[in-house]
Length: 552
Picture (tube, rainbow, N blue to C red):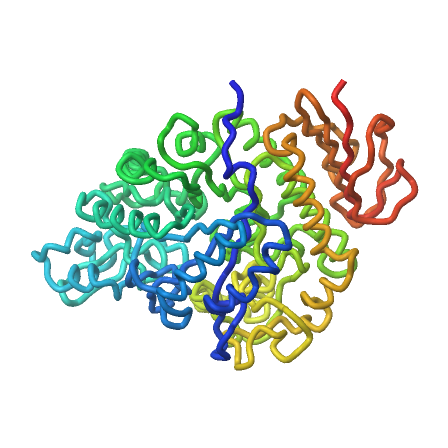
């Protein structure tokens, strides 16, 4: 079959984590006006779609992913009038806006939950999952994504409620049609405002296995895939949302996909499914997670990453679609995790940009990646703000892990690595705020900041900008097929994107080593490279090349 052409396949996403983007009023928290101030910067980069992490009313137990009112803007970000202005300005800049929504759970301070917990016989009780305890403890052995039991005891009714994330994020009961009606009302409200779509947080978790049986699986990632995700009614629920609301609008829907594998991916995004446009699968992001999760690491290498990209390309075929990304608000900085953020920070950041922007799928760039921002290494646990980090710090240190060893894992895997403020310039707090930032700025802001990057025509920012411009012109990179070209070393990732007219060859040396390149490229013209090299038969450390040829 021929791949169906859609605007959301051709455009590129830029994710904004508003709390850390730009503070306009000096309270230390990024806000809506701060985003408006930087729209020219975003437009000039060459992206098309802004994905805005949650700005709804929230107690901020999980930085806005615990929503207490789906129809209100949190005052720390601004007002609904300011949001309306932001949407207007985004569209005036020729950009689109997708909103982040969380429908698997709400805040425990949401009106629905406050009523639900009041008594066993109130009309809101089955908006959530309540169970009596077993043998003096929780109903089963399910664990939270953020550590500890997934059940919290509530003395008001002497029962436990389910929370797959923090205890302030009770899971909504999609089995209840009234809950689904409420959610569809929320979806319609924002679409009628004129937004261009949604990123749906942990959407494969919305259908629960109602027997709530203990799980024998020791590895948490296996529990996610086989117990929490892909429940018996998940496709019925998403299809109903599509039929009732989504299909009436020309929008983009992307689901975050914990637990979605190559075997189940097309069930969510197949072109004839009537569900979602695409997913963010997390296979490459969960690489290295041990039985206890990200802070219990195991070895993986570049070969594993290449296999994941290959498997997903094969799984989607011409029917399904995914987003391509290497970091976001939940995972470490791409140059620190997949590159070399010290000696070869600039080269590896550019190489990873080329990888993201040349694979089939809708590319997503996280704020600051275009500057080459890296992980942060705070030495005090008190400097971290993420509830996940603090929960696991308590759990791991109580079981014998030293403070120093756990912080080492936080430096590599903690979510606050990507939540430190954007480094705009060399001024105090990197120009992010005139006040005290909600989380400390990465101390390397004097060496890595937008002001310097924008003044350097050979910078990471301009490499992104030029690649984005090239991608817009070359539909081969969007809809073309691909072929991996085997190389002697696993450090090398070489592939061809091609269609009836053109061939685009991508050559990536993902290592600190120099490699010989045994490849005839005489019929190709070099379009991009990230290093100055005169030897076409040798690849320098972290060298990336993009070449183009007519297809004979």
